[in-house]
Image 1 (cartoon, rainbow, N blue to C red):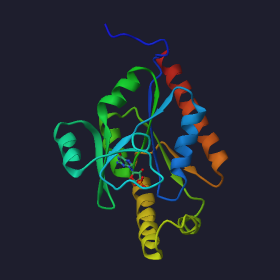
Image 2 (spheres, protein in one colour):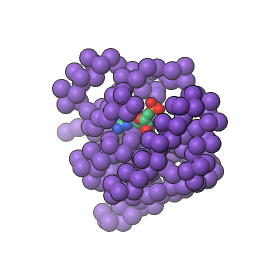
Image 3 (cartoon, rainbow, N blue to C red):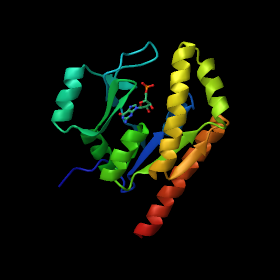
Length: 204
Ligand code: 5GP
């Protein structure tokens, strides 16, 4: 029999958080992680270059294209996606292990990935973060001062496409408007707690 840890529960939940870039999704994800003590963040593998803001093993596992393809060939990913010409993937074994331990496992992934996860694990609970308005998103992308105006326009066009795709996909349980970060984090946490309570109610 598998050894259970004292912190193990039967309450495991896979939480997907998606949203266009600039919407505050990473801050919301990390806020949910801090608010719920049994939650863990799934660290994706990516072939994109590490920036100064990234910490290896915390934000991503930065891997070469060869290593990514090896992992893919060995069926080590729960899902993979190509974003802006770079590859991203969720390592599966770790996710499954954490779910068995009863944790809330958070995947911050895009719509392509969310579709694959829901196909394999229909019990996943998915939240899509929306900007209050599309214009507001454009202003936020500009405020980050990370990219040139041309890149900002590309990200903005990709973001509006991603929002449309998310709505059409049928994958998302909740669309969460981020007008204020603290409030959005609180509402995301409340949604997760309600969902867990609903499932507990169903199981008993
Ligand atoms: P960034 O490079 O800005 O950190 O992330 C770019 C996009 O890729 C974001 O929308 C992010 O949510 C998504 N992403 C990050 N990791 C994964 C992953 O493992 N799978 C998928 N499908 N998307 C990911």
